[in-house]
Image 1: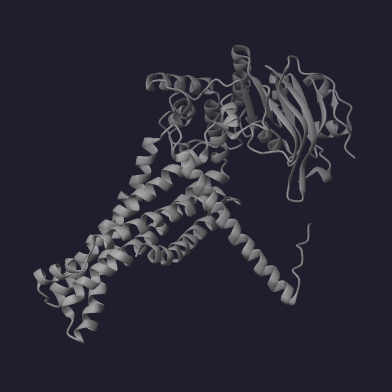
Image 2 (image 1 turned 180 degrees about the vertical axis):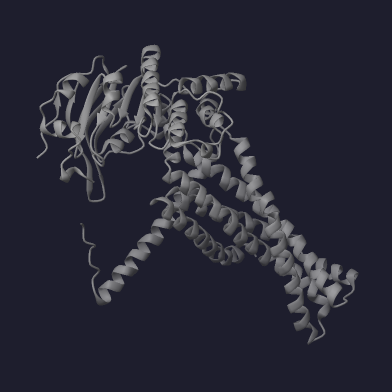
Length: 262
Length: 266
């Protein structure tokens, strides 16, 4: 039986995102089974859990890419489950999201990929767009690759370009789906620095899915662990690492029980 | 390991199989009409992506000219070859030009252009959108507050509706020239008489109804390709399945709708 969620620390400011009783199934498979979570303004929450635990499904609900079977997702006061498609589209302008494999448009250059949301949602002249593209690439430590095609980049570079694209519009909320998986320690540190920089400069709210507990100490205010579609524990990184919860201990020791394998 | 559900035996097995086929066909049709209705709705909303429209018009129209040219040229030629041999038996060789022109403009040029473009462009649309779906590029569009139907489907559907009639018109002209080449070049028919007969029985309505049909075929092949791609699942294998299915389904829809459109338009 899954233990009830232990929320030892409440989000520091008023909630930017509230998730209430979230349920989601795909056919017979119940992926999310009643998630309740609040994420404060300017907070950085890290979501961990075994493969197939429902982390990616959860994060896709936050931006309205998936609709819950039951429950609510409220972002900045707007209930995504009852909002009109136009309101959801408008709300998404506040988000920046990175995907596991970058999800870059492979028919466009790196520069056009990063410029895409700027051109789409602002009337900025091309000169300013170009400057912002260079600035974003500089932030992810990939200067001068504007003219390359995504197919010419390594997996790690693609992911960092995806990161640059996500921050191009200076969003209020950043969602990262495993931003550092497969990156070397230097680039992992670079991504952590960028997240911290954005938080301090713009006060962005960040939700990160990761397996990298080293990143947790660096960027997270709170760490939540998800197991079988439920939040098992939410706590500060320090207290999370010291938790006596058997599943957290097993997870930290890399001993995820057999029944939790997908 | 989960065991696959056993299919009932005998008549119930067939009913089960037939039922799932019907459900799949209805599912396909539902997606087709959903994508079509959505693309109509999103066509009139801002921002208007002129560059993408132009890019798709070049891909659907300009890039398809060689294949349409060859298809219609040889169809016109073989049509002249067959009708000349047949009409010769009752001394009606003089009407070959009329038969070629009427067959091409009313039926062959629109249908063959539709089928060829479905194979060339409809499949590419399914493959492109399918790959975008399985690599989360479509999710990325949503995440960037961009409706994928608006950005991806609207330019492709409208480019096809606009370019198919132009390709058909080219096909009409090339086919007539193909017929003329065979009749005059091979059978020694009088060039002036051939061209006179070509236009003697040809009415404007013959050409325009063919063009209207081809615009419908453009709609059908692009919506089918986009719908198949948009709802792709199952990685690279799924993309392959969608691509094949897009061509087969679009060709079937074109041939089926051809009958009803002809009945309405002529």
